[in-house]
Image 1: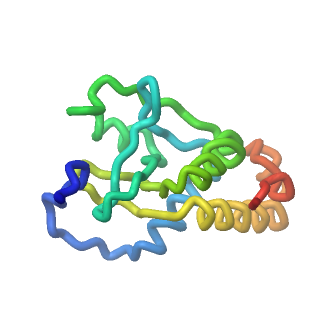
Image 2: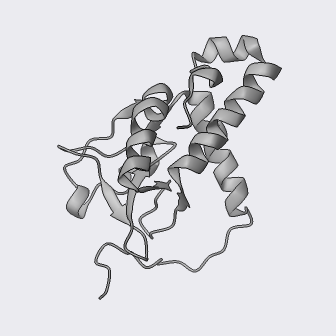
Length: 152
C-alpha cells in the first residue's frame, strides 16, 4: 500500500553538506537559540517516513516551518517550544509512543530523521561540553543543566 503522507522530492539537487553536519548544525542552532518550532492545531503536526512510521516534525527556524503551512497544515500555528520543555516532556513522550523526529522537514519531503533517544543523548552531550567549556555563555542562554536531563 502506498503511504499517503510520503512526499517525493521535487528536486534532485545534492547538498555538499553531509547529513551528520546538518544534524550537528541543527543541534547547535537550537541550543544557541534555546527553542525549536513545531506546527500545532489541536495537536501537533505529524508526518510519516517512507516506511510509514509516525514522525514528529520540528524546525530550527520559524520560516522553515511556515513553508509547510498549506494543505492539511494550512490552519496550523507555529509555536516556539523551549529546549527545556522539549527535553523534559516532548522527547520522553516521543520515546514512549515510538515516534521518530523529523528535523527541518522541507516542502519537497527532505529532512533528517532521528530517533528521540539519540537526539536526547546528543543534546545532553553537547550541553555538557558547553557547560564545561563556556559556563558564562551557558548561564546567559538559560539552558537546562545536563545533569537534570534524564535519559531513562
